[in-house]
Amino acid sequence: MNILWDFDGTLINTYPAYTRLFTQVLEETTDPDEIYKHLKKSFSHAMQYYKLTEHQVEELRFLESKIEQRDVKPFPGVEKVLKFASKNVIMTHKDREGVDSILKYYGMTHYFTDIVSIDDGFPRKPDASAYRYLHRKYTIDLVIGDRELDILPAKELGIKTCLFQNKKAVADFYIDNYTTFFEEVTL
Image (cartoon, rainbow, N blue to C red; front, side, top):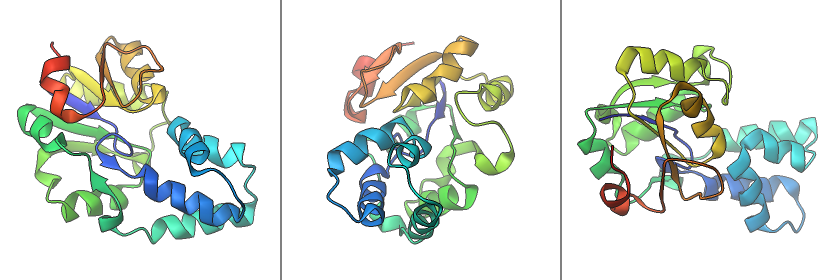
């Protein structure tokens, strides 16, 4: 099985760190659960929702660059799924350097055959261009993401989809944790 993965919120639990950054930048009493909810739609959606000023966006980007690898962690059980797959590839809006540094820190680099990041020039999700490129190259069997945005390109291409910790969009499979992956996902 060849799997295309989203990165933030799917492989690596980055949302708690991002939520803390937004809380710090907003400098007001904003419910962290609400911030988290908006981040789950997308980072840019949260910035628009909270009407961040240019200065706040710069501050947020600066703070994001200071997040250390130990502040974000792989989801429990994800390595078992990575080991099971024939090939794993990533398509992410995160920059390549950030992805590489986290994967290296956790000793996970060897699991991935290819990584397409925002640096590769493909349009942002839900545009299917990057997925199409990876599907042609590796014949993707399953796309795993945590947001509807992550699975829409796969649905357009006729690839099976799995939503992680999200049952609000239409997917072929849903899992709340990777320990149930083999019970929930059958191709």
